[in-house]
Figure (tube, rainbow, N blue to C red):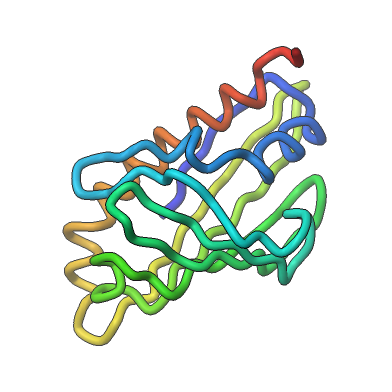
Length: 153
């Protein structure tokens, strides 16, 4: 799945705003998809491959997140694993990647998400999870873009 947005902010500013953004500020619940309420146990700054943290959800579940790539100001990627909620029955892991590019004074953002299904679960992910996730990610990206466009305080 891929979602995209355009931001009226510089490439560098957009990247530096979105990469360390508070996940709870952009991932609000949507139907059965819980909101993110916090992150914890972060291993240092969120600015290099290998950094990890635990993402806590409103339903009490959690997942481990690891940055798998970091190339400021154009790209970062991560993997989510060790799900404790319902997703643990559907996916082995989830890979996310963001790309940032600049043209005409605007920054283009592309965010791709790939679910690695458990055996026999690909159809369920494609039919049930993917449409919900696209809406969840579209809203999260819009909130992240708004944060990048907000004036500095």
